Amino acid sequence: MLDPIKQLPNDIGRFLHVVADLGIMSNAYASNYVQNLSGLAAGFYSAIDPKVAIWNKPLNVTQIPALVYTPTQLDALTHAKFNVLRKKGKNANAAPVLLHDRTAAIYDSDFTFLLRMNIHSLVIDTICQRADQYEGQSTLDGLQMASMKSAMDEDMMALQKRGYLSKANIAISTTQAQQNQGRPSVLRQLIPGLFFLWRNKPLARGRGPGRS
Image (cartoon, rainbow, N blue to C red; front, side, top):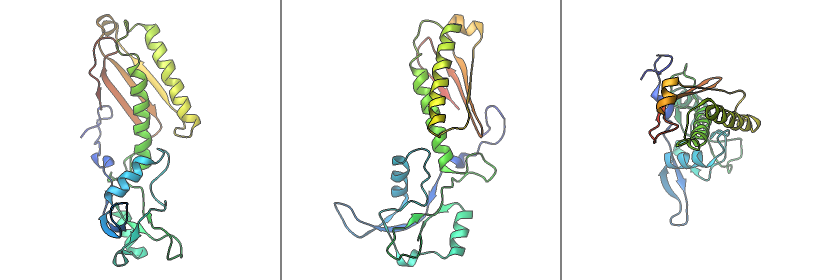
């Protein structure tokens, strides 16, 4: 895939996180059963705050003795971007934690960690929710566009105060012909290390967003 703006390879591996381990789990229906941990990692990821990483957090699971890895093996698994359980500390009864927070993206990608992808998704969702309030409005004139930008700037400032962003700049543009016809505008969200382009987003007639 090519990035629509930079025309550079867009690594789809940033959307992948590989968990390759088993653990002993218990729940209300069964106890001490062996389970693939990908579902546990996915559930944990969906439940935590977007600015919190999934690794180094105690999990309610028991490691299988035959799958307790050496430091050398853990280094190799991290380099290969496979996530597994590891022991934390010298306490034999301590709950294990996940090894790392890496995606399957190439190493020179801006999205080598799930944490960054999680914040990226939060920013996009925030922008989409705000822009949705302006869909179906009667005009795309300057006042309407300025109002939407002000609201989005406030949203980004709120995220910045909460520690999700260090800086953000939103630019909204549309041609006079698009304004007259109620046709799509272009919305860009620029954040250090992140780039988001929202194209073909009608603010006056109908729905039909296209994101890339």
